[in-house]
Image (spheres, rainbow, N blue to C red):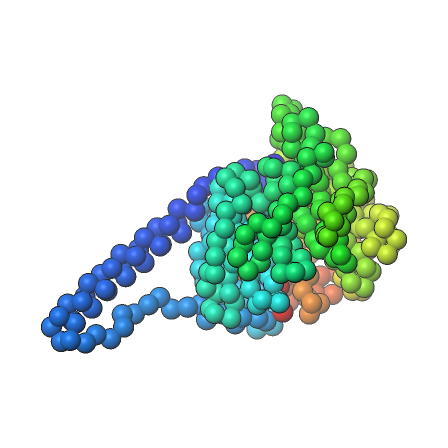
Length: 402
């Protein structure tokens, strides 16, 4: 399996969030000691001031970019102010394979914690990012993505169950589910990836990988799909994709009224230039001419998006699995610039980028020697930072909080 954001040579982590439990244990020890000390003061003085509690994160509830940082052993949520690049580091522990999703209606953030934690955690931003609840989605179900639905509900895709769960945003309780088992291949799994709600429909990417393959690591098999699911009736219609294994997030482009995503086919350790950046028009209900194929780019495309000026952005790999981040012309389908390059010998990579509403592009750079966030702008991605803004653990996933 290759999840968007995973290192090409690193298997998905299977840990159980041990650093988080150790931190909780230390807090309990400190709390118990403080309570005992307070009881002694009450016994001798009859009064006691409240013991010191851990400080709440000082990050603003909005106007930041949330960063899920991970070394694949531990994870922390951090934040950065997009204009000043002020950092709020290590706000709270999260799982080591997690992605944040923001809910403006409830001023809340949902942390989707993948294989090994298999849970959804809700944070209340306006209360100092305190945890409101953490709900399991089932052992080893490996949740992949989360999108918000009307009626204070949300949809969560499960990689290991061919199902999209419909949950309450308020409590995390299950309200319903959508069975997509008909899209499983011979190994019994459909590999449902990204999901996005737009215009009364849930859109879902179905990868379809061969887990039993012996000649490659979970290569795509047969047809991959974009599914269009009525959010009320759950009726499913399918759009066969021209390229397989859609691994990226679904990006909605308001100006083009389209969905943009990457389908790299054989990917990373299975390197082959057989994928593309794809675009699906919500106006016509049709796939458009790919803004860029891997053959045209000369690189694997792990994620892509299109700026408001029509210029494209991509992150991916070359044949030596060096990480590249660059721009491309969506009309001529040519790479216009490689804006950042990281040798595979470094051990780091570029897991993702965020095209912010302010027009700038924020690159998650997992350079082993200098991890952090780098800022680019313009049609050929001119870098505005002289070095990466250090955010603690290497950045794994980014989410805009307007």
